[in-house]
Length: 166
Picture 1 (tube, rainbow, N blue to C red):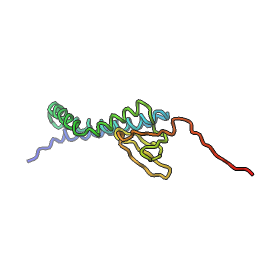
Picture 2: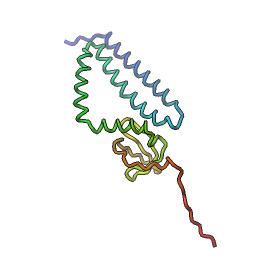
Picture 3: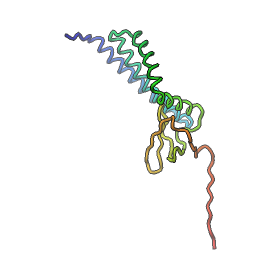
Picture 4: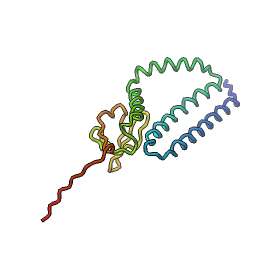
């Protein structure tokens, strides 16, 4: 015997639609930023918007369906503590991504070499950084593995050409 509250289901659908529209508008607004220095900020912000929107959808929907949110939030706190200790690598990736953004070591559009892979940074996300090489190959690095970076875009390069003339 299942009792479905149609009004609550409609409210949940409206919340999901509303947050999806807000997420789309925020992503559109952030993507309109055309400054080269802001491209890195844009990619991390877009990634964060995805996570925050998903969390808000779930919590808000559960509240409308009559779930006790205080108990869920307390449980999430304990779960976060457990996950935090077991998911050390993920947290390290996230913190490294944030530090990469604020320290300005490299940004979207820079040509870098990481672990022997030379490519242009196309995206710096919360957990990963994506490089694209000259042949179109894409390599995704965890941010925590971006330790020995050779940034070839940070300073002017010098080229030496020897030409023999008769």
